[in-house]
Amino acid sequence: MPAFWRLVDTPVGHAVLAVDDCGWVTVEFAALHDEPRLGTEDDGLMPHTAAWISSCLREQVGAPPIDVPESTPFRAACWAACRNIPLGETRTYAELASMAGTPKAARAAGSAMRNNPMSLITPCHRVVAASDLGGYAGDRDPESVNLSLKSKILRIEQCLAAK
Image (cartoon, helix red, strand yellow):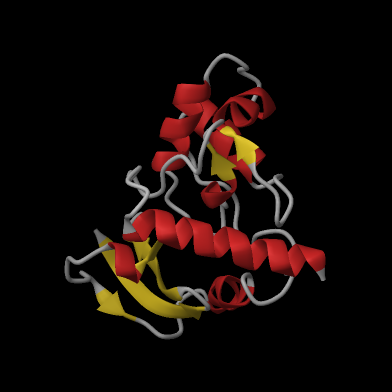
């Protein structure tokens, strides 16, 4: 449960930047979650990270401002590898598994992306299935708000990369 949170404006809607009592940082899109926010709103929370999140779909901003969170070795390797996918490009789950050092673990790479706690900071939207967009926030329905958001983010990034 978050101890502190703040809304961060992005071109695709508000992101919720949150920190729990143990220092675990999460970033999720507000539009994808209907439940009320718990914890205390803090508009001054992690200003550098909030500024990076706010800018990352408006301009090329460089490396994420915070490290990959602690997790299992494979998930951490997937999250780190995902951060190396260039702006405006995608990789398949199989390619991500290879980048993370376990070439035959495409499904596990998909699970790592599904459990990514830092949307945009670890750009899991850049990881797609071999035949389509794959999923986003656990949803594979092509008509869903989630996949619409993933598609919109990818289009914005492709435009930024082309500049």
